[in-house]
Image 1: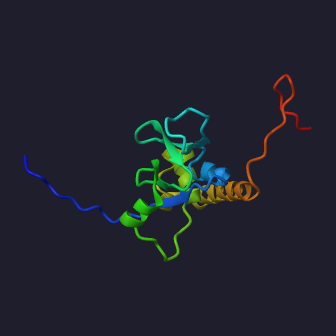
Image 2: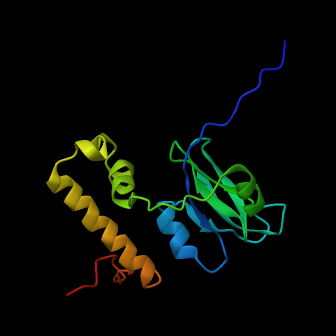
Image 3: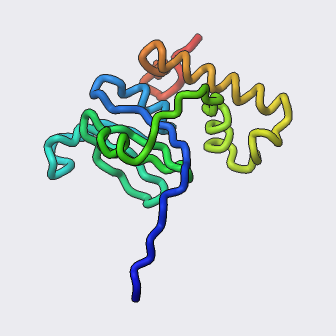
Length: 155
C-alpha cells in the first residue's frame, strides 16, 4: 500500500479557551456539555474539566489553558493553543452570530437550515440566544427553589 497525502480543507471553527474561571461561558458554548472534573477522575492531574465529544460519544479531559473547539459536525474537543495556532488562522472579518442557529439545530433537529426558517421561528431562536447571553453575562443561570415535595417554590 502506498502513502496518500491529504491537505486539510479550509474550514472555520468556533473556539473558547478554558481559563479555569469561565465555566459558565464554556457550558453555554457547549450546550451544557462541559463539566469540572472530580479529583482522580483522570490520570493526569493537570486536567481540570471535561467536554463531551458527541462525535465519538465520550468525555474528553481539558487542561486549563487549552482551547475547546466546536468542529464542523458540532463536536467539541480540546486542543493546545499552540496547536490551534499551527493549524488554524484567526478569522478577523466579522462573523455572523450563530448561537441562535446552533440552539435551533441542537434543540429542534427537525427545524431545517437557518436560512429556510420562517421569520417567526428565527425570532424565537434569537430570543432564546439572547437569554443564554444574559445568563452567561451575569455569571450563570437562575436556579429555581423547590420545596421538600419537589414543587416549584415560586408564588
